Image 1 (cartoon, helix red, strand yellow):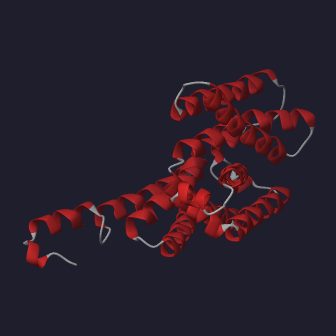
Image 2 (spheres, rainbow, N blue to C red):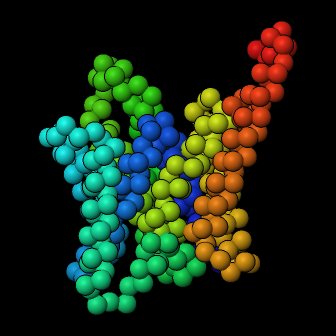
Image 3 (tube, rainbow, N blue to C red):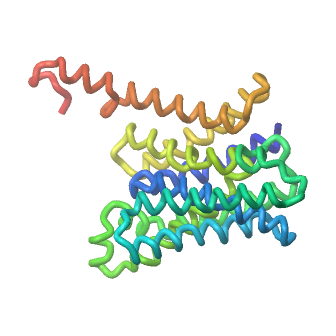
Length: 274
């Protein structure tokens, strides 16, 4: 439980930080693509005797490169290309699993196994989390401008192409870190939901960042405890808590919540908040 709480909170905080950029950039589908595309990398890494993180990272970045190549060389729209690539990679992973004799539990890869995490996996996850956090903090201003207005960023001399692939590489690393907590399938929730929740609560990016990190860490801790006492899926409980926080923000956010907007619409114009 101590290990599970430590890793869940760490990965939750990192994913919460990254989710702010994902929300501003509108990359929910890209996060889904990367998280699903790492499955064949994990299996091939097992076959070759390499760390799972190496194979997952290579295939995560490879899926992004494939998406970019197909988009540039064809008339197919980006969302369609993303759907084609990540389902193809995921299907390849399933075939490799079915043809490889091993003791790999597909359920642990798909849905995580944070309660059974080893010391080596803890060190690996902490290292990846430190790298992701360091990159996001080091390039914070450039990435923020790139997510808000890439045209303006390009006009003032910022290399947006480098930032594009840097952010995608960080996304791949975060997906690798999330393998141990919520698995391949649900890691996209950790990369999207905290940022979306915070986005409803504030208009300031700094405040949005702290809200996303805190909500993600809280969801991870509460989710792990809930799964322990109810004997249910840890990954499912973490994501359900995150979804519950989003629903609360969606309904009761002081400025953008549905109930607040309905209340404001019922007031005379002279009584509306300025």
